[in-house]
Length: 127
Image (spheres, one colour):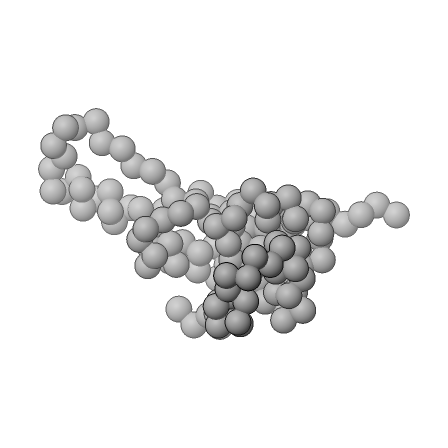
């Protein structure tokens, strides 16, 4: 998809119990948006620390390719993620049928790329 990705492991920072504030500060110093499953803490950090290069919070999805497609769709039209919080979560499809047909299963899998995407820019502090 053409994104320049640096994982915490690639940066030599995995399994070191680094505080979330430091992770956000590091990503901002590198001019990189931060992608995380740790929604609760990073949404709070967005509220308290508006100076960041973007935060993308996601729900857990075992289908990483579909999740990557949703994330790409959420950010592709944006010129910059500076100061923006983006929430990407999968839409859950439930069948009421005990044994759904293969066509219903295929349609649900094809539609799973649809996501609830919320983009919120932190308002500038009032002077």
